[in-house]
Length: 582
Image (cartoon, rainbow, N blue to C red; front, side):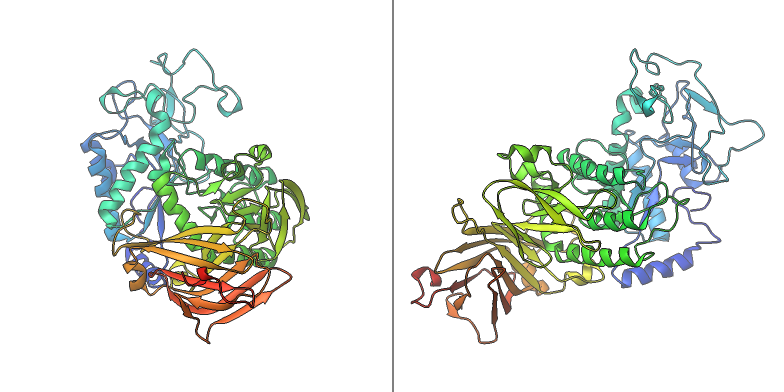
């Protein structure tokens, strides 16, 4: 930015021509570029956003009826009013103008609680200075602020434990007596400031980009997830904040914010090799997965330490393989409101112990993540509800239990414990350097049957897959624009079948998506007499079976993901049962 002003480029260090070439290179490499924007517009003559903001009258007012003066990174600022009827055209125009200069792919909304380095009912510039925030790390107030004219809104007849000191409700933000359009008090609108900015930004990006927007917001409210992703703010590089990240992400998902994550390795303070190693292992499975740190902290890129790089490659590799499953969970979140990351009690409501689990989480209903969240740990004391759980890295049987129990799991330094639950069908692809490349790789279906034969539905499994181009304005089932596949499988002592029922297969057929491999967990013998769509399988299809781990693999299928199909097998040497050709 030029002097940290929204919608500007530093003409010396980041000239537009060089930025354009840089973005061309990123886009050719199928990568995306997301820029930051704060709601505080610097008070500076001849600065376009400031001049147009005054003209459109879109700044929040103080108790005297003039635009409230605050201070953030660029110095003295006015705060945009995202409840004003003119804000949409103002914000959209600013984004559109800047996008023509820098063709970015999304916006990151920071400091939008709002954050303010000053406190006071009214503030003004000191004489003989413009109150420039020349030193980026300085967050002390340089404005002259006072509380003269304060009302009951600024000092309500109760105290909240603000910053653990019971300080005034308007401290380090706008005064609660400030007014939005039509006299709406900040007292009543404060908690929805970030939400209102996200709504306007989402709308603006839809207009400018003509595709599904990416918005990341620090401040949120119930339902913000419809408009923006979220990260949990300025955490610290501590083991307690690693543990707290799980609680924050679970809570966010329950209140309508499914695309959420915490700053991996910690934002404030210096991280350590061990902490960063354990954090990327679990952070790889946050819906929003990002390493981010304060400018004052030591470097913490994942390649700084060899051990962290090794863990990152392993955990992120599995994340990329699970992208079809994760993307289907995004579709489910969009259409039903179900969180992507879920507490165990959602899938196991009859298990009272699951109500108290906050150090593990589920991805959807099928994948259990059990991270290390304490220093020096070489094992994890993890809870498993009843059923069969398979290691998702190597497909081995971890345990099969008739009632829920805690288990001590080894926690190798380079590996996180991730398990898949019986009754699940997980669509997977191969890992790659970008999501665009990963989406071009062949599919694998992982089918997990239970080893607990006495359990109801022990011999069945189900799952689904949603596919679209990732850029359509809405995630919905639409002919030619998306494909939904519903999978069902059944196992018996003599054989079994897998069926795929396709809704609107044209999109998947056009993209050339195909199923290469079927992995089945929980079989007791080798699949034989394989038929596909009622015809004997080609001799090029290979079948293998690992008896010790109950794992069968069928490779070389090359079945179109956009077409319904049925795969049948028998495991006995007798005549194939009648259902094998249904």
